[in-house]
Length: 506
Image 1 (cartoon, rainbow, N blue to C red):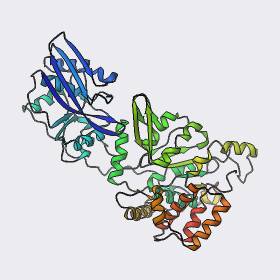
Image 2 (image 1 turned 90 degrees about the vertical axis):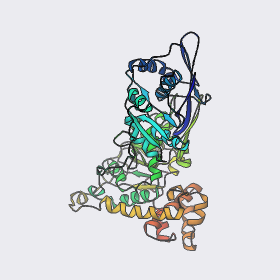
Image 3 (image 1 turned 90 degrees about the horizontal axis):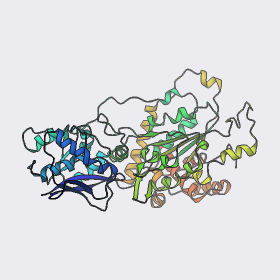
Image 4 (image 1 turned 120 degrees about the vertical axis):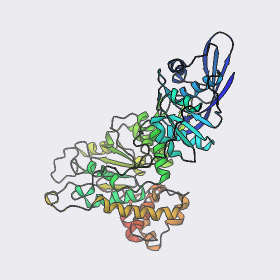
């Protein structure tokens, strides 16, 4: 007898529908799974066999063939255990019900318990698009699945026994209620704790308001890492679309929990400088998202930038331009979103004290140039703001008055983002840093005074075309913070001062 059960699969961060076709036929007993399964899918045979027996059902003594369609798409993971079991019971006549409008996802234990799987949110969104009316998922993954909405009922399943009793009408399960966030968001570090460095705070405020990349250069102990780790406290609120996009990536990576299935705050990723290119960009035999994708719609903070391997830094160049990373393997090609703010911190030389008033640096000019040369020019050209972080003076450290709080700065940042949202519309760029050529021509027009200033700066600073566009984007953000409809000379002048200056060796 043949039975077809609907399930779901993942390719990158996109879900798609999978149909588990289960056929019981005569011949020597066998259990085959076809449809390009990986090792984890093939091992479902033993998990399903034990779960069927331990839950009081009879495992068919016949030739069992399970085809996971579409057969040309490689299947990975343990999420097909539950649909295979349901299909076998239905094909053997032990389960009689209409399964055409339902989909099943879940890993099985040998005792029949249903365990959570990664990537539930993108799969639930795919189920809603496919017209699934009832989605049966592990109980721990139900809250995440409810985020898909669309009027689809999500049923949390604790065990195979509970599922079968529900399907036969003996003991119906209650659909999971839509998940709603609580009010227990932990307060992070605040800019009020940072003394001095007002111009660096201003640069970070501009970066947050426009989604711009920023690099901070200064000696050890000047507060670079301290400032960067307080950046999340002034980042603008995420829109619903941004929250779902970021959560999809974290869901695929298995980083969501039943208590917090949705990212409510922008991600902040800070990998160690020993990370590999694959860890940064993603990959593997079954590709997984890397740090640049886990920072999607958030911040990727690279402390001690020159200490990262050159091949690690070079993988950032394409995602910084295109907002996604594509991983090609023999088994296929997947793309992950990678639209992030790059925040870097670095010392001016190997010892860290180049240019310090104390004169303690003993690095030669050649050594300083070699150290700074570890970061390629094309990568530095993709960074919108370069801020020098000087050492603090004694009176700044001993001053007891608190600085401006993150809440006050964030109010201005949110106001600037609202201006950008109204300007670009729901289908346009999410912030000024993502403006394309069309938006630059329309919203970054310069008057004669600004053109004269830009012309002089272009010639003196040796700007590239990319650098020219990035200055316009930063100028547009400064104008938004100022509430100005047009970019004016002060806005453009401030944007120009954040290009690489004299503290970097040429």
